[in-house]
Length: 317
Ligand code: TXA
Ligand code: MG
Image (cartoon, rainbow, N blue to C red; front, side, top):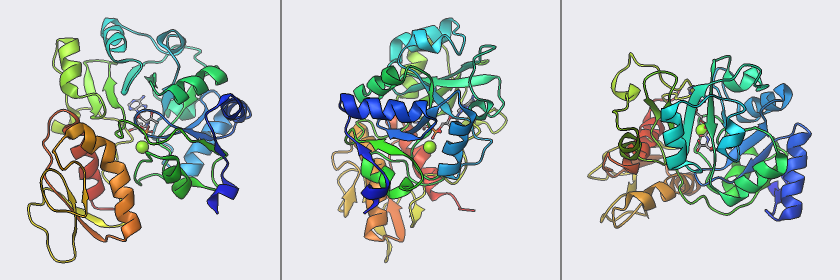
């Protein structure tokens, strides 16, 4: 029944043309990326961007990532130093967001930057995202397409479950391959990891040749303003690093443990990242009200997975 309210577009030429037209008219379109589904609006249109905040119920101090088809397009909005150039050529298109100095007269809505002098930019690799960005021909502001604080969407059905009736359309590109949001690197100063994500920090350090500042290890360092303590929350409570299951708990397993849902029985972090949000959505569907999660190694993609799980387990306001 939500389908009647929220048009699902097929990512063929006609569907993408319609999605681009909605964006040009100041509407909201959810679309697949390799990380999670994004909720897109024209980043130059204040009213359209305000619509993103309204649809998500998102605090307006939280800035948005601008999506562009290639580095040439990104150069119209932000300045690249040698470090940014190196990371862009190594990891774009892909699951990396760079926070860079905003150009004067960028035309980007101040609702996108929340008044900051920096802009977060990303070049997604997903072919549907690429086609939509090219069909639209402008900067697309897109947070994850979920109500603020809830689990990120990795399928069009997740988007519909969370936002039907509040947005104009969703382009269905099937399940997202990576399943974890982009890694965010701040380069407006010393290189800082603002959010662990789909590109492991180790790979970025190897490319930069210098260490990354890690704000999560040092409360004095700046962080991404959107990194609220409680986020990615399923309906049930979440207990981490569970090596036993208490009565009434549902285990979200990792590795060779017996569990109704397992992120990766073979303890593969890439598989676990791809399953993370889908399994949390499924636990909601099962009515799990106490979720225990197996320990997950804190390296590579595990860092991003543990970051999301810690926020899912955080006390809710
Ligand atoms: O994979 C992704 O990054 C997905 C897909 C749709 O691209 N997008 C996504 O967006 O996760 P969102 O809005 O859920 O998370 C964006 C994060 C927030 O924590 C926000 O505070 C941070 O990026 N951010 C955006 N602009 C920033 C800036 N100028 N400085 C620091 N952090 C910024
Ligand atoms: Mg999000």
